[in-house]
Image (cartoon, rainbow, N blue to C red; front, side, top):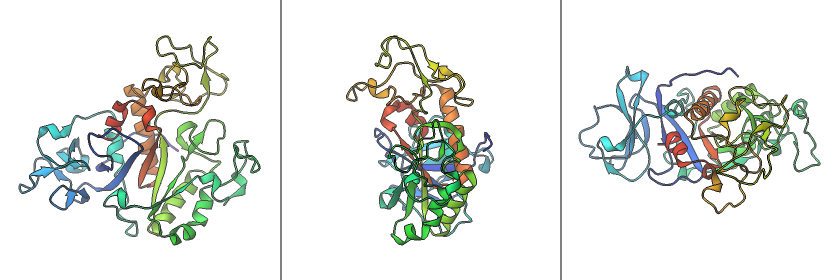
Length: 349
């Protein structure tokens, strides 16, 4: 999968109410920005996106919005409506631009050439069928042991489910009467983990699960049946390739921290996460009721310095690429409570 940076020309809405502390995170995509419907507005029916300042004069109350530069509008500023409590529109309702706005824009890159796709007015009305891909159906046995961890007799190892299997069982899923599917993370994992939550490379689709083209084919086939596809993503951590031999490790130490190193110098994350300075050195969470520790390393999974603009930009680039490649309909964001609030304010203003 080729790494690329781009500025999309469409906008995003989010189902988390503005000003509310995030729980499980959801980001949803919407149609193109040229006055197409995006989301419900407080008093006036359906929310729309307008070139700023040409907003309808009769609309006195708006959802919190976001001012962005849109290439499709020739650089004109625009107002993006998002769910939340209604409030009078003024400059205070506009959030300043941040390093992840490319991701917010790309989250609306849906193909308008798929009329059969389910139309989402609010995610509260959507019924999703959750699937751990490896545990669902083995549609292509040749990819089962690409990570060297295939053993269907062991509950902690790969069982063989893949994107091909998802595609082959779409008629069954559609027959359940659901609106869409939410599948486990799709990226390449560090040690061939079956679940997908221990990434090696956020820019590469797991070959063990079928590879990029099989994922693209699955999303297209789901859309052809009117099903939405939500991808699980992780913005808090990677796999478990980094640690320390310092005394006390992995006990949580927010003051001194530890000297990090690669467990195996020949087994590192590919660029850009081959830089140890992009990871927290404070050790693992010992007390999950401690609000400071909750931001630490989770079960040995290498904890990203998500407060760094450079890390936020990398995450944005990775998930922009995922949207552009797959044409997915949204993200379910894992481990929201284990990253600082500022990340999510950037991710979903």
